[in-house]
Image 1: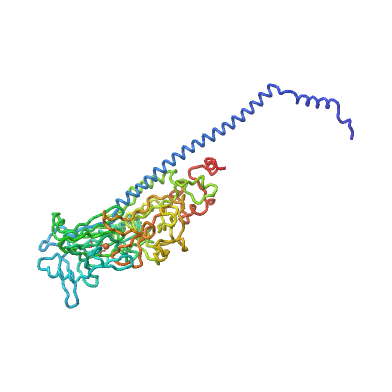
Image 2: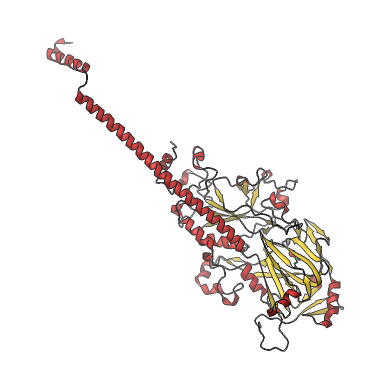
Length: 582
Ligand SMILES: O=C(O)CCC(=O)C(=O)O
Ligand SMILES: [Fe+2]
């Protein structure tokens, strides 16, 4: 290898560099380095400051969203409560008799002819004409004598107990009457008040009234303590009581729903005191059959009533689109007195505005997502994080059998139907179903399971009298924290009057699905009342009004990765950054 290739000047230069390297840096060099370091620190500080600033802004925004969300949820809760409180659960009226010899009668619109009641064995039949005159006392007494003691249902047993029910009854096969509640216009009124049509016309409906019994409550002490009418089919929606024009005092009918009570007093003295209605008339009351009611003691005379079971005959119209094209069609039919337009217009309900305003806010139900990756769960969801599905206990209970699925939404009652229609009018998807509360933790929302169908007692009774949905298959799924936001508390059982011995509702505390049937007007006939909930799916903010999920729970229960949309934040990194998750 030729050494001569390394020349002397080069060697000198190399040693010079080495020497220079050992020399202290010049001031200039030092300044440059310091400037560089400072610039770097400044950049880091600025970045950090920007990050802090961003975090502050987001904190502020988040705080603002949380406050608005809280405000909206509060408003929604009180709106749902007010809606339930103001809803009709019973109605009543009076139908005058035509007066003999008066051609142009007042109230001729619905005044009716005198009515006849025929009863008694073949060949020995008696006719009682009402309103009665003094000559008909014999027939009236014969009717009272003809009656059998009325029983009632305690669980599955038929009971005669005059402390609970003291009345006489005729089954519908034992009498006939010329009175017809359709002709008297009663069914029209009841249809309009208890099963109103809606502008959306989701359900065409009418009511079928079926004569059930004639009852006589006589002084002293004729009565029927608090009970709920035993449902005779899944489509039974209510009961109608028609009081015949026979003098009596006392025997008021009290009907209750939640914490409200309506009392119908048909005593002769009350009737006479009301000058306008002084003439003899038929009085009537109708109510949803899951409402607790009682007849107070009759203190004089005989209180004679005809009872009818009311069934809803709604059609969920497949032809809805065509029907709604012509609004005039919506104005006819039962429930539309004198062609007047629909009584129920969801857009006029306060609830509609509350929900609509909430939906227009990006902060409303922004975090409700489930399930989410486990490492994020504790960061994103807290026990107070509102889920994106609103859950509302329905105001009424619904009749069902073991075999048949429920008839919801077609048999929804009053407040529940208008709630459903409101959500529909806002384009929201509603799901109706029974909720079963598991034994492990009543009152804890996480222990609620949405059952796939309504269940009968024997299907989920573990022998102890409590429901045991865990012991069986197919009892639906739990509604975990973070998935749903409960809007109202579990409905309290109906309270009787102070000092009363109302047992209706006693089972409710343990069994969310099964409602009360301790005292019925007939022994249980394999049809039960159950509590139910309405779940309302609220789409992510950007998709409100345009979302078309395949299934109710799509993007909420199933797959986080498939649809990890954040409505408020620009992208997921931002979200992670904000929450300090890396
Ligand atoms: O006569 C009444 O007012 C009500 C009767 C009743 O509740 C019933 O028969 O179930
Ligand atoms: Fe009843």
